[in-house]
View (cartoon, helix red, strand yellow):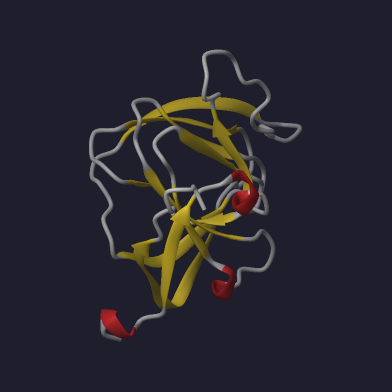
Length: 167
C-alpha cells in the first residue's frame, strides 16, 4: 500500500486527562517546589524497579509509520525527559489489541509518561537525537513483552497545535 493511502492519525498535545486511560503523565510543578506521587510504579510480586538512562540515537519526524505495538503485562514503564526532550507517544488500551483504538500524543519537553501494565504502545520515539530520558520499568522473571503487528500500517501525519488559550 502506498504511504499516502495508509490510515492516518493526528498527534495531539499530551494532557493528563487524555492520557488517563493509558497511564500517568509525569510533570513537575510550574512554579518552584516539589510534586510528589506523580505515577504509580508497579513491578509485580517478583519484580523490582529498574532505572535506566536512554540517549536517543535518532530523532523521529513526521510522518511516523506505525507497524508494530508492544505491551508489558507484568509492570509499568515510564519515560521522563532529562534535558527537555520532546517525544511522541502512540498508544492503545490494554486488553485485546485494537488498531482502531490507537491514539497519538506529543509531549511538551517537560512531560514524561508512565504506561499502565498491559497498555499497548509503540517503541520509544524521541523527537531529537541526543536527548536523554530516564526509564523506570520492571525487572525480574517472566515474559514482560507482547508484540502485535498491524496488518495495515498506520501513519501519524501531523500534530495539532494548541491555540493561544491552551485549548
